[in-house]
Image (cartoon, rainbow, N blue to C red):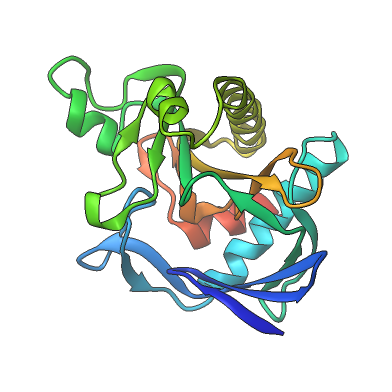
Amino acid sequence: MELVYKGKTKDVFKVDDSHLVLQFKDDVTGENGVFDPGANTVGLTIDGAGRAGLSLTTFFYKRLNAIDVPTHFISSNIDEATMTVKPATVFGKGLEVICRFHANGSFLKRYGAYIEDGKELDSFVEVTIKDDERQDPPISKDALAMLEILTEEEYEVLKQHTIDISNFVRTELAKKGLTLHDIKLEFGRDAKTGEILLIDEISGGNMRAYKGKEYIEPLELEKIMLAI
């Protein structure tokens, strides 16, 4: 396989024109040794985090595929911490789409003068540009269209997919007595059809989940969600 991209938490390999393989690492985002799903740097390494993240990602992707949500997921190998996916092109140099159900993280830092920590939000969606140098700045629908990163019509599809997928994840967590505060998703265009697909992962590494007021660490979240 040919290495085509080396990322913070995953490496990407090309198998052929119809298949890529994502290799999940034990590195997670954060700062000063503290995990933070909103951070844009690797903050620490947690033994087993790659397989745990892939296990939970597989859990969600299989269920989303079963209800015809468009994703890039084909299959996974938990033991090897790899996931086989359909090739997709990202929007611009990459976007992250956050759905917030509670005021936390960077949202609270920006708007703390107007809202209390943890206050409920109504599936609030915001888009940020993947740009480490500029700390992943938020970007509006109008700016996305003017910069020709995506069209206004694509933005509406992206937003609706984000709300639907995030609420699906929220419901699955609620079955285990957990509350989803926020989740970060990524999307791309199917390399062959142009259809907007959910890409990357859905794991404890890109969401904040709580049990009451207790934050659930990524590895613990995987254990809770996959427990029979």
